[in-house]
Amino acid sequence: MAASWTPLESNPSVINPMIEKMGVKGVQTVDVLFFEDESIGSPQYAVLLCFPEYKKVDDIMKPIYEQAKAADDSVFFMKQKISNACGTFALFHSLANLEKRIDLGNGSFAKWLDEAKKVGVEERSDLLANNAELAAIHAAAATGGQTAPSEDVEHHFICYVGKNEVLYEIDSRRPFAREIGPTTETTFVKDVGVACQHLIEKLDNVSFSAIALVDQ
Image 1 (cartoon, rainbow, N blue to C red):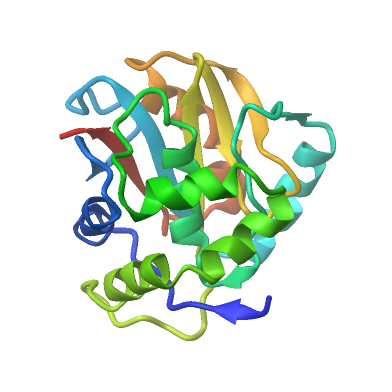
Image 2 (cartoon, helix red, strand yellow):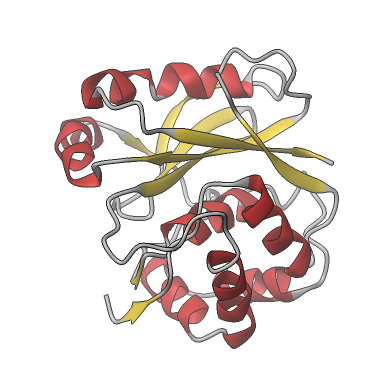
């Protein structure tokens, strides 16, 4: 990967200012303490999952993706070509696939998305790497967390997003977005818990974190 950014912290206090600075309106992220949490409001739009030992995860997920159903072209996807940017890619994948459900505004993210939809999945990452405004927003968020950024990154972000009542898993290190199954805006977070249960059990590591994208 040619470009390299500072990794994000999985923390709503880091992600929410990014969302606001990019011009997206009316949504925020909240911590998911457990996937059956009834206190998470509805509608539930997306979940950003941050997990450890990504190399071990690769071994767990490889056979699943070999048999997985790829999402159709209506699902926005881009391959990550920026090191340590998986948190921003997970956030961007979430927002981009919610274009018809939330107000993306007319700021830097919406403008980038308009251009990104015109190019292929390989070029979208380059378009982001060359966007000085979005790179600066990421950098400000990455250095504003509660923990100092580490150069030795073992954690990785992916996202789960609901689109047209279908749940998708989007990992920017994979070749495509994976279709999982039906979901609703009231059961979405629970459905994500079921979808990632296999990974959590196989990994056997409690160093997971999840944040949900919901209305403000």
